[in-house]
Image 1 (cartoon, rainbow, N blue to C red):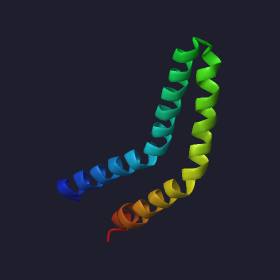
Image 2: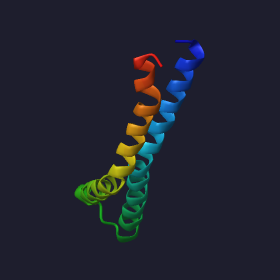
Image 3: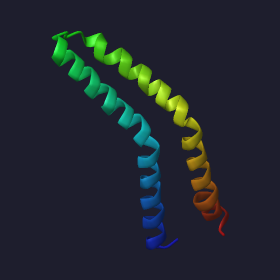
Length: 88
């Protein structure tokens, strides 16, 4: 295994990790901003108001993007990791 191959696989793994995490992070960011705006406009400072909707939205986003996440990871392992382990 060469140094270039290690760096290439690491770069690809980091990119896939970013792609897989992006839907959940973007959902949390958007819901957090909307709830923060709502709290600033109404002067409601309840801690559960920020936590519960964000968790619910992230669960829905995870459920909706679960197929994409698993297909991306399966493709990465089948195309890059398993042939490397098998010695191809």
